[in-house]
Image (tube, rainbow, N blue to C red):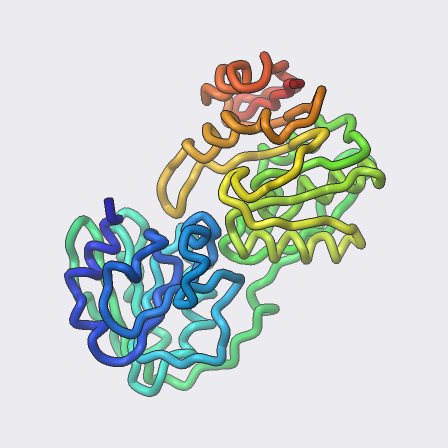
Length: 335
């Protein structure tokens, strides 16, 4: 079934009958099958892109190429407002004279802040339509805008865990932008051993866990995976800042990872866009054993109330609790 935001755009098909359009981070990967006109899609999330990657009208990456100009660009409201602000600042220069810059999203996503987010790009943002508990806002880009620099949006911060320190690179849109979250810190504090050979940081975010693994054992061959192009870029920059050689892979869960590992470490996601979604981790746990070599191990941190221990026992083996707080638990199990 199509997402409510795609259904809202279908109601506004007349928009796409004139000029050329770019959709940024649509919730339905195959959205172009349901819209008529000169429309392209750009994805920062691999799980929506992978099924349409053979279609030249779709692109995946950190930011869209600046070579193209559009009569209209529609951004699907991200979870973090700072992410929306970064996208709008970058994309505004890709709108033709008197073209439109738009935000669409479910009302509970924060899209009602669109008039303020769009205010710097024209005279007044208007609400074009509302349906399916979603809203579509637009502004005619008419103001002279400063040049975009990614450096204006990036953040670098230091973390220290035990005897090890790391410099972390972060951008809006990456998990816990600009700081080390409580769950990941607890996980790092209780990783006592990293085997030599291939290990995986699943859902790597800014690359904190994967870089820490490489620090703990220089003989480990560390792979980091994430669905987010922003996360993968940040992880690559984090590795470079700490002079580490790591491999970053875009993957929908474990579907795009084609090797086995001696160990997997993760602070797994529980959101898809703005929605709470535990299915990603449940799917990961159900298939993790297929990516673990003989005697391979899984170390995972999660909210304490979740049913992950039962899933780990079913899929791999009964887990031990390495550490816990009032909010988080660190689990370990071996195949």
